[in-house]
Length: 145
Image (cartoon, rainbow, N blue to C red; front, side, top):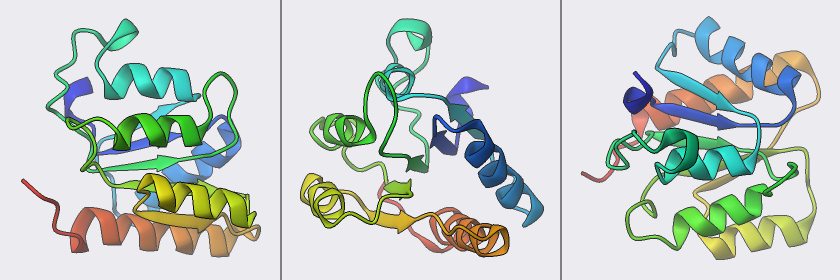
């Protein structure tokens, strides 16, 4: 089961993660979702080490929704690790954050992020943004083989 994850959500705010999962499921994007609470856990999962040492690294998520401001390991550090490793660099990574800071945006694109989305504050707008993201990355986008 853990090798079949399609959407990896890396978010330390449990409420934001729950809203994201609810929005995806409400709109029929009930793909296999895994929520991880910090960047350290995300790196273990993505690189199949630590608590996820039995997982096959070749079984990559179709998309990673990644927050920036997290404890232990930041989203920027996770992004840097993903995009600097040949085995994982093609995994689409979408930054989903509350930061509108230009240096954050610029750094993420410099590191190879596929998309940078600022979380809408209003619930309906948040839900629509998540639906649009899920629809694009899970159905419209054609990933490399």
